[in-house]
Each structure stands twice: as structure tokens, then as C-alpha cells.
Amino acid sequence: MKIGWLTLLLLLPFVGALATMLVPKAKALVAKQVALAFSLVTLVLTAIVAVGYHQDGAEKYAESHTWIKAFGANYALGLDGVGVVLVVLTALLTPIVIIASWNDADNGRWSSKSFFAWILALEALSIGVFAATDVFLFYVLFEATLIPMYFLIGGFGGAQRSYAAVKFLLYSLLGGLLMLASVVGLYVLSARAGDPSYLLTDLVKLDMSENTERWLFLGFFFAFAVKAPMVPFHTWLPDAAGEATPGTSVLLVGILDKIGTFGMIRFCLGLFPNASEWATPVVLVLALISVLYGALLAIGQTDIKRLIAYTSISHFGFIVMGIFALTSQGLVGSTLYMFNHGLSTAALFLVAGYLISRRGSARIADYGGVEKVAPVLAGTFLFAGLSSLALPGLSPFISEFMVLAGVFSKHKVIAVIAVVGIVLAALYILLMYQRTMTGPVREGIEKLTDLNKREIFAIVPLVVLIIGLGIFPKPVVDIIKPAVESTMQRVGVTDKAPQIPVTEGQK
Image 1 (tube, rainbow, N blue to C red):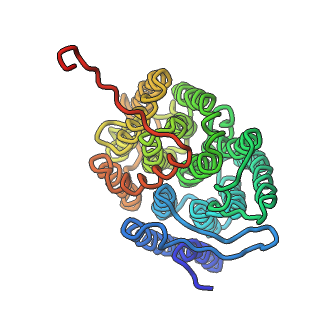
Image 2 (image 1 turned 90 degrees about the vertical axis):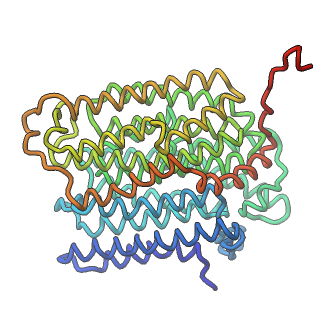
Image 3 (image 1 turned 180 degrees about the horizontal axis):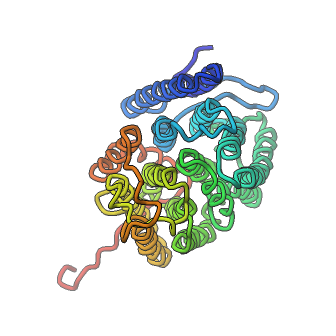
């Protein structure tokens, strides 16, 4: 069997994880270097795939091979614009996390090499999820991503790491169980049609009754709503992100949670277009609640990492809102939002991690006056915060603006209320900065050291991309647009034509 580009992209991190584990325990530095090398090679290969996709289209990378013939399951991979963007995000964040987390696993509980091996395994599985074009393969990889994340949280997190890891696992397994019921339902429908198949190209042709489509949609949507995470299925995230290492939190919120919103686009809209339209009013209300509830709870947090986790619940509300607005502007904005949120939240978690590792506490009350003793750390923390609140000129602004514009064109009341979330974002970010970085230097802060070269090196790519895409987002938007147009056609919706008032003199 000829190995395709996407298979190679999926295998490289797996090989890297195995190679990292084979390094002798006494040579922890070598294990880190091996993991970093494989993640960088994967990033280079991903860049080649992204450039090739932009030039030659999706057909160049599609591959399909019979896997389990009796079930109609295939090993099928392919990319659309949404998948390309998220694969690039995955390959980009992985080496950044490895560099930023260089010493985070040296806690003596577990071998540090297993920490970096699990990171590479998670990268491989995430790439597979974003590239899978067979529903059964997607489900297997979707569930498999839980394994490395469970061990990353439970093995290397804080004092309540076991509780947080188990809660994450149980919530995710419950969502996956309901999706499995819908996957089985799709198999039954395709078998009745004559030839059982899980390929997306075959499933989109299935003729479903209205009730059947709605029930199948709900199974998939529930799993994705847990993963996203949306209120009221969100409570696992603050615990998991609060107890995990900063690097693990980046992978959790920046990559793994994106599987939920990615799945809503590819599977909910792609396979169940009529049910998606039927569910839109309820989903938009849930998304709006997530925006406001996440922001309000962020304001009241006393723990830095839990605060950032709640901000992400609010951001995911915006992303889901853009998806179910069912407008091209909203869908493009949501996909761009996924990428930009990954960058800004990664910067925020990593800089917060640098701060916490120096002070030994995540409590906001334990800080004050940091900008006087560590100005570079304080400056990068402010930049990451401004990016998270979508300051104009930084990359999250354009995606948030597109989402709100797309929602406003069809659901004005929802969009107007959602703007409150932007105001609250400014409040929770600036309050956090004020309480930790400004004012008199608190006891225990005076000896804080500033960022070292390795820590700066990990943050610089994020800063460059956030500024660059804030000024010129067109390359990413151009990749996303064809996939959005295809989804819009599948759902059968079109954008509203702008209403231009005509005066008496113009008639």
C-alpha cells in the first residue's frame, strides 16, 4: 500500500512518540530533543501539505483503503479547508508546547519522557481526527484522543489531577457513547440502502426520514457540545485546565476542544443539514448562554488558570454561534476563530504558566507589582490578554467581527446580546492584569525572574502570527472559503442580500 501524505503526517508523531519512549530513562534531555525534532519535522511536512492544498486542491491528498469490509469501514483520509487550518494549528502548537514545557514534567512522579511521548501521540491522533473522511475511523480516533490527554492530566497535573482527569474522561466517554449510537444508526441506514458504508461521500446521499435525521443529529451534537465545551456540558474544563500543566492546557483547549466545533461543521451540518436548521434556535441560545456565562464566571475567578478556562467557554460560544448562524461569513469567521483562539489562548496559558512556576501559586491574590520586577513577562502577559479580548489589529478581532456580522444578518437580537460578551472580556482580562501585574510589589514577588531565552523563543511565533494574521488574514480565509461554500450548498442556505433603502428621489 502506498503511503499518502496524510498517512505520513499521521505516522510521524506516532513514530516520534515510540522513539521518545525508547530513550533510556537516565537520558531525559535526549528524550526531549527527540520529541522536539519529530514535532518540527511534522510541522515542516504540514506546511508542505498546506501549500500544496492551496495550490492543487483537496484531491491531491485524498486516500481510501478498505479497513473492515464486513462493517463497510474504510481507512479514508482527506482534507477540506477547515481541516487544513486545524491540522496546521495542531502541528504548530505541538513544538511550541514542547519547548515551553521543557521542565514541566520533571516532577519525579512519572518519567518525563512519557510526558513528551503522550504529547506526540495526541498530535498524531488529532491530525487523524481532522483528516478522517470515514465516520467509523473518525469515531475511533475521536475516542482514542482521550487516552493521551487522560495521562497528561492525571500523570503530570496538580494536587487534584486524578479527580480532574477522571471527570474529563467520564464526560467525554458519555458524549462518545451517544455519538456511537448515531454511528450505528448510520450503518443501519446505509446497509438498508444496499451497501453498508461509513464514507462521508456515501452517507451524504442517504435518504433519511425527518425524525431519524434529528435523532442521529442529536447523538453527534451532544458529543461535540461536551467536547467544545458548551454550557451546560462544560464543567469538566475548568477542573481539567486548572489542574493540568500549562502545556497540557494549551493542547486541551487549543486543539482537543476544537474537535467539537470541527465536528459540528463536518458532521452535523454535512450529514444532517435539515436537522441542523431545525436545531438552530436552541443551539444559538445555548451558544449565547455560553458566551455570557463563561465571561461572568471568569470575572469572579481567583485562580489564573481556571479564569483562562472560563474565557475559553465564552470564546467557544462565539464559535458555535457563528457555525449555526448558517451564513458564509459566520462559518468563515468561526473557522478562523478556531485558529486564532488556539494562538491567543496558547500564549495566555503559557505565560501564565511561566508566572505560576516562578511564584508557586495560581492564586491571583498572591500577585501584584510583577511588571516592576519582570517587565518582559508582564508585557507578554498583557499582549496575550489583549489578543484574547480581541483587540483590533490582533488576529482574534477579525474572526470575532466576522462571527458577529454573520449572526447579525439573520439573528439580530442574538448578535446584539452577544456583544455584551466582548465588554465582559475586556473586564476580566484587564482586571486580571491589574491585580497581578500592577500596584505595589507583594511579598514573594520581589525575587521573581524575568523570561529566559527558551521561554521567549516559545512565545515569539505566537506573537508574530497573532500580529500578522491581525493585519493580513487573507491567506487563511482563502483556504477556508471553498469548504464553507460547499457546506452552505449542502445545508441549502444562502446569505441574505443586503437591504439598501431607496429614497423617493431615487425611484
